[in-house]
Amino acid sequence: MWQYEKILQYPVNIKRPNPTYAKIILAQYGGPDGELGASLRYLSQRFSMPYPELKGLLTDIGTEELAHLEMVGAIVYQLTRNLSPEEIKKSGFDSYFINHTTAIYPANTNGTPFTAAYIQSTGDVITDLHEDMAAEQKARTTYDNILRLVDDPDVCDAIKFLRAREIVHYQRFGEGLRLVTDKLNEKNFYAFTPGLDRVIKK
Image 1 (cartoon, one colour):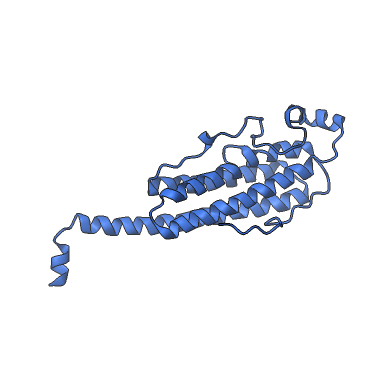
Image 2 (cartoon, helix red, strand yellow):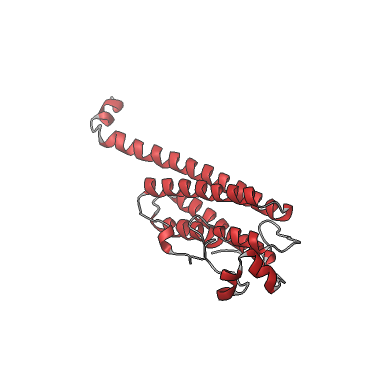
């Protein structure tokens, strides 16, 4: 069960609307490496995770990714408020606007709707953790690319926070992978050395 505090995880206060930036940042809302995919990936994988520590890790990070989705939505919304038709057409935001006006919709930068094909949940502990580490690095790369194209300090401030959290998540999943590997190696060591227990007891 979640407790919801009615504030963003990190403040988003964008003073200057910019639909060009909004279109770029949509990648992290409904794109293949975005926050929606991350939250669904981890909150789905947690059900088949056999280790309680890692089930907790997936729940915690998956929940935080929902907070990041909220932040990205707030960024996009603030970048598109009070736009004139001329600004919308000039920026290339018209292809999005025609279907959604300035509502937040889970799509990537090109307008392709979010699909569950972006995520994976295999039930194999090692496979899923490698998937999760790769997903965090892909998200970090997307944020790096956003920072290369955006120069508004209000936008960059929030994006840098999100980027930093991707790095932390990558590190936590790496720790989880080491924990699981140790557990599995220990199990396999004894499984393939059946006489070892008798030798140790002597």
